[in-house]
Each structure stands twice: as C-alpha cells, then as structure tokens.
Image (tube, rainbow, N blue to C red; front, side, top):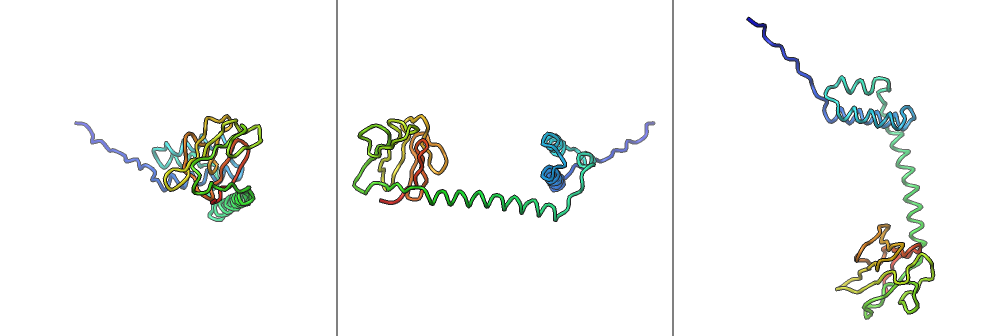
Length: 181
C-alpha cells in the first residue's frame, strides 16, 4: 500500500504584485540603488516569476518603497517633461509662417531649382524637394524623393500626407508653420 500523495499548491504572483515589484525596481533604479543592467536583469526575474518567493528574492536587498518616494519621483518626471513641452510649444510659435496657396492654385512646387513655386535657398533642400497639391477640399504634401526628407509635425513622410493650417512642416533643415491663404 502506498501513502497518499500530498500536493502543495504554489500560488503564482498576481499582476498587481508584479506591478508593485516593478515599481520598486523603477524607484530603486531612479534613486541610483540599481545599475541599468541590474535593473533589466531583475525586471526579467519579476516578469518570469512563478511564485511569490521568487518576487521576494528579486527585491530582497531593496527597500519596499514608500508612497512618498514614488510620488516625488513621478512629480519630478512630470515637471521635467513640462519644460520640454513648453520649449517645444515656444519654438513652434516662433516658426515662420508658410501660407497655403489661394483656392484657385492647384499645386506648389518646393525646392532649390529656379522656377520652383517656393524656392528655398538652403543646401539641405533638394532641387526638387516636395510638392503641395490641392486634392478635394484640402491640401496634400508630397515628398519628391528628397535627400534630407520632408517632415509633417515631426514625422518624416513618404509619399503624400494631408496637411492643413497649423501643421508644422520641414524641408531639409528649414521649418515652417502652415497658415491659411
């Protein structure tokens, strides 16, 4: 006769417990207690932990983290981001305006070559850089295979993108804010 088997039940950590552990790791890395490599290694341990004991081992030498510390870390991050957003908004408002063509015009060529509708004298602008075409009720900006790219609102475009007044456009190194014509 064999003895009955006694099965032990291992409780897997919940998502909330994993999230708390990751928060402790982020706070410790932010305060300089963990190097970047150590942070990444322990984060991997937390994400793959099969038991609460494994979570505890990953955090054993770290303080449990206090709510005030997390609040301060989050607040400093938000204040830092505010400065970046403010500088970006200030820069956009100071960009020179580029008026969209009047309703009767169907297209505007942009480039360095003489005869362009908008001739830009900058080496970063290709000879045949871009074209602005009236399509339907709005305007579409096309990159014409330029070397340094055409950007709309900070994103490089390939092909055509619909634009309107207020959009930020860049041809090579020259930036403008579109205005209604």
